[in-house]
Length: 254
Image 1 (spheres, helix red, strand yellow):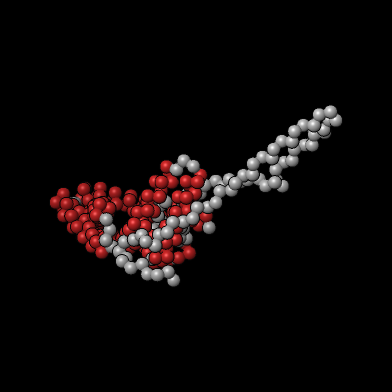
Image 2 (image 1 turned 45 degrees about the vertical axis):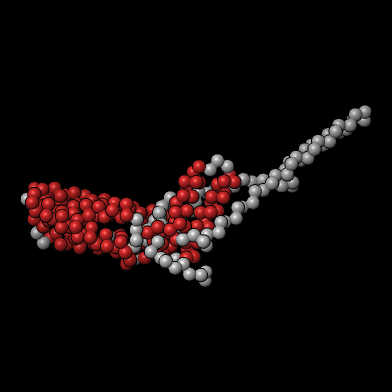
């Protein structure tokens, strides 16, 4: 399974690199064979169309404004450059550009993963950093001290037994039923910062237990949104707000 995941990641990286090279060649071709006014018009048309669609989807999902603006601008620039590259290829090779676009679409990772689901990486749940477990020795495992022969004239005082190690109990997860979806997502993000500032094992275990509870509560409230979040490849400090905030009714536990 590890080799399959590595192969799928290599394929996606290679496809993106190839598309980036093709777009770069198309831009060079456009600047050589297409006029500057046509390049500007093509860039504005492609960027405006994609930006409007992305903005409409983001507003429907009630995403946060700063993040939404960054995504809209990023996708608008990508779309504008792709349209300019297509114009450059069309001017240079004509209808052969259509076959190039079909090849790019057919080999794209989303289409490949849809046609061959077994090639897609399994959804992995982001786990908080795992702390090293402390092991304690029981009475039977502790080495016994060698017996010392007592002298007849003087008897040594027996040494007191060493204190028994106390195993730390796992902290109980907090009650999250009173939190809204947005507050729960914010707590998940803050817990990552809290985990980095912990100085003792007890503090780390408490934060890890809380992060597990946040994930379980999000999955209980919205299984479909949780699955979409997992499929997007989230990071330990990622922001799941855009997947859960559109919901207004949590519903009771099933």
